[in-house]
Amino acid sequence: MPADAVIDPGAIQQWANDLGIASFMQSPWGWPLVEVFHFIGLCLLFGVVGMFDLRMLGVARGVSLQRLHRLIPFGVSGFAVSVITGFLFVVTTPDQYLYNPALQTKLALMGVAGMNMVLFYVTAAPGVSDTGAEDLPPMRARLFAVVSLACWLGVIACGRVITAFRPPWHWCPWC
Image (cartoon, rainbow, N blue to C red):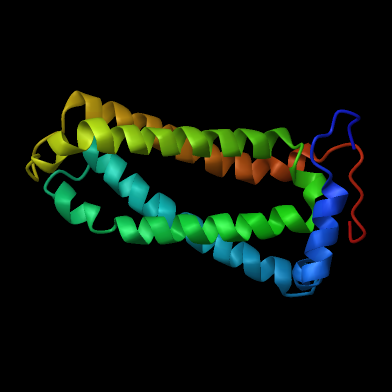
């Protein structure tokens, strides 16, 4: 663990052990099952966000943005599943995750995506709701869509490379 560590991975891991999270995750089915649900959550999230953003950029004209907006609860559900399963990964092996630059970048991109969404709904969403099925939304909305797509693609990419950035002090009993 680095000397300037603010969060104690050992304390988090002990908490996960005390609650039985670690023993479940280290069982033969724990980690793979949680991975499956994490992937399903990402598919729901990115499927909805991706469709909505691509439509705002002009792909699939003819599809109403109002109709696509009805899918938002599925995207939110996917986000919730991904956060819960991601939390399970982190608390099970916090030494692999907490000081990992890929995870830190992933979390930063999620923060930017969240702020982008809030700003979209505060500033550009009213103009989008008036957009016809064949029309392009206003330029401001399209810029929000580009930022959103870039952030979520970055989140997925960072998630895939987390294991490539294992800290040097990492020790894994099953590796």
